[in-house]
Length: 142
Image (cartoon, rainbow, N blue to C red; front, side, top):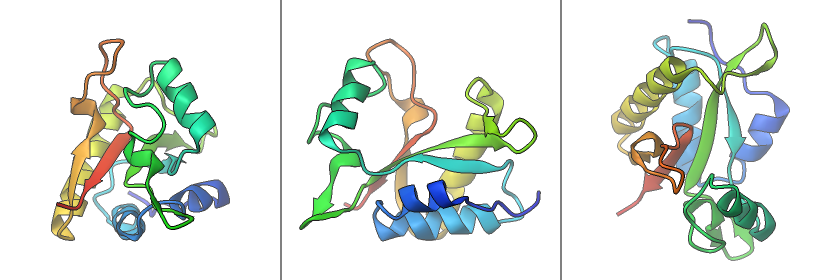
């Protein structure tokens, strides 16, 4: 698989996350076993975005309850990250490709473990609508 190159939007979103996410995402992107191109869809969420995600059924958490809302002082420090498989051919995320999400999740979990981090995958969660959240990962520091 070719090396994954994060665009400026993905880099900006990644910069709002705990530094471990940068290490994990860069290692995952550079790993020859990476199953697909992918991008960073969301890092830190402000109050409006978190409440919208909750109201839209895309999150079970309200503002302040999500791993996406963590701050250290006045700096975003998200422990949650959302990623998605990306197609350069259609220049869009592959939202409906369950196989790509699952393969990417296995890869991220393996890379995180190899680097000494523990992460939870949102594909194992149940959102209020009864579905999982296959693009979401939470960094577990304890």
